Image (cartoon, rainbow, N blue to C red; front, side, top):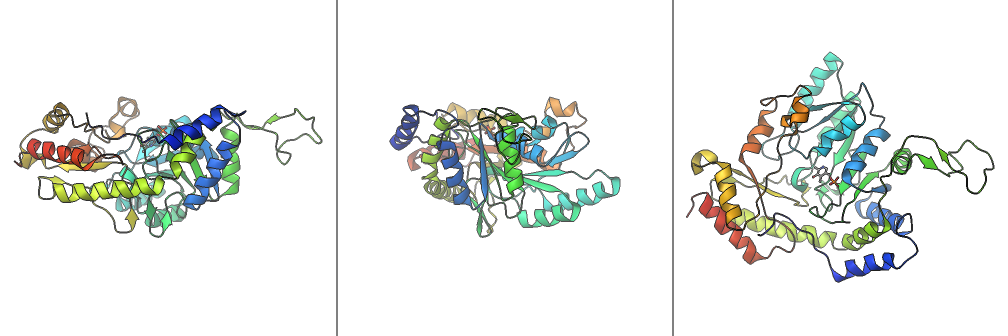
Length: 387
Ligand SMILES: *Cc1c(COP(=O)(O)O)cnc(C)c1O
């Protein structure tokens, strides 16, 4: 089976991990801060806080922005459930904004309209989680302008988007947001096994997230109440978690970071090749905004089911039977049973739902060879009746 995504582990990665395993520090050693510093510098953020997953990063990002009971978080339905769940973890209410069918990202017009309405009703969100689907940035400048006008804080869920850029800045530089979150799950652009990062330009937010990832416990003289404390002394000054990244994970992440640019280039080459090979078929290829360079985590097409004359499930099954590991990103979050129990229903977000009915993610990862890509294209051509 040609998978829809897969990690690339080099001998240098293995050696970097082995070095940590032979060292004195498996966790809370020097490699996590080294990784944080390298990543912050790479994307142009002042601070990076490494944690054990993007889900944890989203959680502590929301807490650092003081999201809590009585507050509201907005995100899109067309994302992984974690983008919404972080609001629930904090005791907040979650609501959704529908997507733009061409970019698969949040629709800025819907956002403007919904903010105006929420302002009238007194139901404005405290936090907006903007998801960069497939690695392509949302229209952050417009989003930031709206967020500022209504006093909304912005988190970029850039789980797909490390290595990409928007306008002239790297994603993660937080030019238009309070905090940006990356995922280092193996299927994403670079990996640490499991892992995530929260980037910010705000020192206070970085401090708060640093505290929350490790039990809310600190020895920092500026923060503890005690004067002249004993050498073993620490204080718990907030309720945190154990969301720490290990040095083993950070070593892999740091080693992979060196190949980030090459990975994104290769993903773009392959995506552009798909664009050319799939042109003219009864399907839509992912549209790129010239203001963005997508990290191309996913290559999601929309099938023109009416002209193909068969169901998405039929197409999916035929491709899987031929060894092409297609997938679907995403089932709209508001249609999940957990969210339907919270009052959402099918039909609430028609653009996300019609995207979902037609969507298919085809294999894309940096070590995908052109001959395997040709197999994918051949199988897809046959499945949509083009041959
Ligand atoms: C993968 C992903 C996450 C969660 O990442 P983890 O590191 O697995 O916790 C969150 N949001 C989006 C959009 C993702 O794709």
